Image (cartoon, rainbow over all chains, first blue to last red; front, top):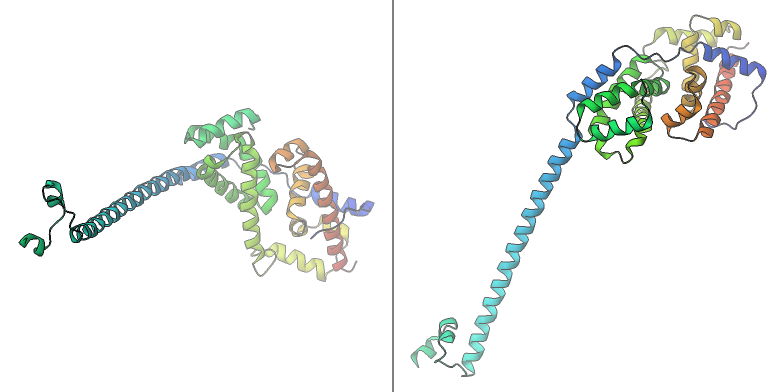
Length: 117
Length: 194
């Protein structure tokens, strides 16, 4: 309900005053503060829940970060292995392997054909 | 007991950190204000008591989210108004205006059917119920300002703190509340075919 503010007639003013005079003043019931405080203490503080949730989220974030790190590591190793294998084949077929290079023979597996040579 | 703004702010700061002793002091210091707002929102003392308890339960849970501890009184009153408004809305969804209150229901029926005069109306034993019915039809924000000012006799500055509005707005809301209440009462009287 929305009305414009208009001057009330004296009789309406009197009616309102008399109506308001029948409305009791607000007297706070005895012991209300104690009851309200007790009710609040029975409820768990939201900060506890917030803290708990925050910690759970933090753990979840760390877990997700670890999982992402492991996945990245696996991907890098896998890519590196794949690249190394390809390089071995290319280099071997080009005949540029220097067998005297110990690390090459150790790292790059030779094909059966190369082994027979 | 109503402490000053600085004291309330200090209590709010401590309570937000989980200091239950400070929270108790805060409850004691603000129950008066919160109860008045609750009562002027829901209209009955029983409902107002429930609102006050729910208000402090919610406050204890959410005090850490209060940005300005100095405004804790207004914050508490706002919580009370929100809870009270929800309660009032639920009450209005009941089939009758007054729910199970037979005295009030009979009062309205008599108002409409027996055509009592305005004098009789205001002086009748059912007056409180009729006035309450009229007040429920006044906009909440106007009604609260009107009752806190004209019935509880609180200073406009105190009401402004409670409702978190400027003092001038308190005056204008109270005035509009009077205007609306007058129109509702006049309609009640007219319904009685005076």
